[in-house]
Amino acid sequence: AQTVTQSQPEMSVQEAETVTLSCTYDTSESDYYLFWYKQPPSRQMILVIRQEAYKQQNATENRFSVNFQKAAKSFSLKISDSQLGDAAMYFCAYRSAGSSGDKLTFGTGTRLAVRP
Amino acid sequence: ETGVTQTPRHLVMGMTNKKSLKCEQHLGHNAMYWYKQSAKKPLELMFVYSLEERVENNSVPSRFSPECPNSSHLFLHLHTLQPEDSALYLCASSRDQPTGFYGRANEKLFFGSGTQLSVL
Image: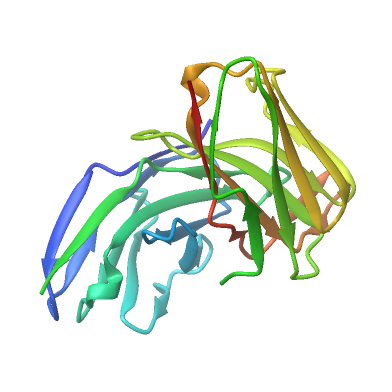
């Protein structure tokens, strides 16, 4: 079974600075997807960024980028130029590309605070 | 607003009550999900309705009963719950495509704002 580990329960960053949230996962599969979801105080989970395991190039979405290290099974999220609206819970998630494609395995989350 | 609406936003119920959570999606998706979010635990997938098939997590107690009358509506019927069932219940939807004989896949999930449930 796949597992996702987020070892940082809480992180804090100064506005306009850069912060990196860590995520590691365990799997025996070679083809899969990795995600970062954001859950603000409104509670609505929103997809931040998505990475296909077969792609070597790290995904980027505006101020959000990932450092995907497949051999190390590491998938960290970097937030550049942090804004107050980035304050939220961030969840790392894994999904198999095979027949269990509907099942996301989530980590326990990292709460990010942004200091003005 | 992601196009997935959940009601009620908050619910307090006694252990002998019967209540239902409702989820509605306006995105034209063909799959809907119930997740349970407890403090300091990973989100737990409870039920999936995808491509007219129901998939469930076998560890979910029978006091939780899902109903999906059509592709836009999803219910979670609750009865004789326990205090440990107190949690945030999230609904999600996606546009699934079949992959192979049994598989399905989607680009991403769209979540609602959840129902915060407290069982006294």
